[in-house]
Image 1 (cartoon, rainbow, N blue to C red):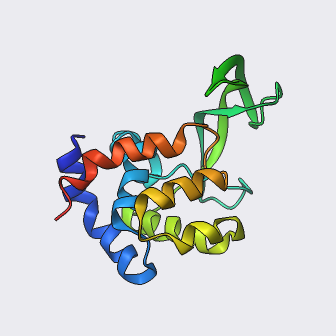
Image 2: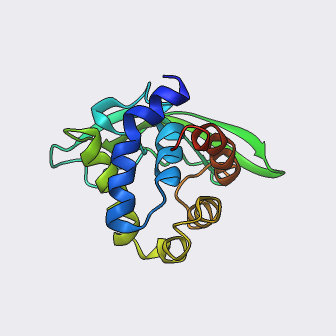
Image 3: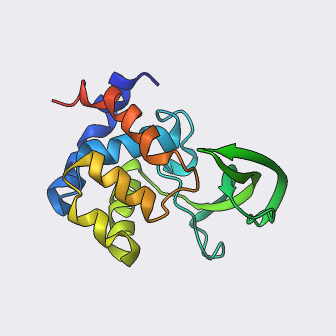
Length: 168
């Protein structure tokens, strides 16, 4: 989906989240765009790549994904491959495999759950203090371990440039 269409379609959900929680609508849309490839890869209305930790209650789906760790051991329930790589000058392993992710009845449910994810997890306390400034928020969630990609904050900042020009 093109950035303008993505923003037009999902901004109402991000704005509702911002009104309820203070979490920047730009931050929410940027994460949704990155994690779902601009809405093209959002099975089960899953826009944020939030894992389902129990995999047993029916609100999960098994999806092929990629993660980066410093361990050779593939952390996923169904490992596919592990390849040594260097990211930001750090020796890591790129793991492919299948893991359980949350699924939702609607995009709105997903956007609301994504916001609650930050409030329920204490490791994001610093991020919530800067949640109105999307660039600071990106740095804080990356530092807290939202994603395994060591370039996550920089990638979000780059994607946000395509979002902000369409947010009115």
